[in-house]
Image (cartoon, rainbow, N blue to C red; front, side):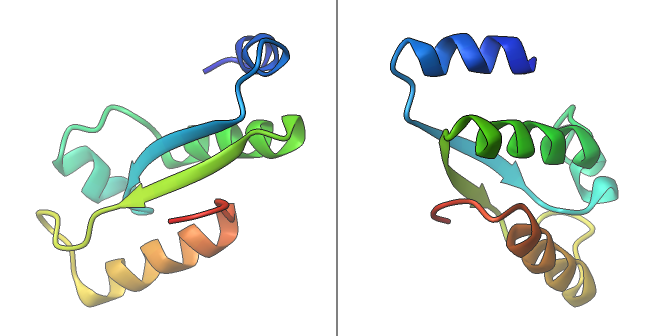
Length: 86
């Protein structure tokens, strides 16, 4: 979502978004046909933080192609993007 759109939504009362990140691994996101790049999700999250929009992030464990290492990668990703709640 473009920054300007988020800004307008914030100015009109948006306080919280529930965001389905699902995984922090691009290959897994491709496997489930999520249709988003990890880099785009990170930028979206930075934009929300900058605007003061809270995020409840959702993640899925056990997606097709996921390994213990990828689960760890997703945990690190969640810590990096720092949603308000998970």
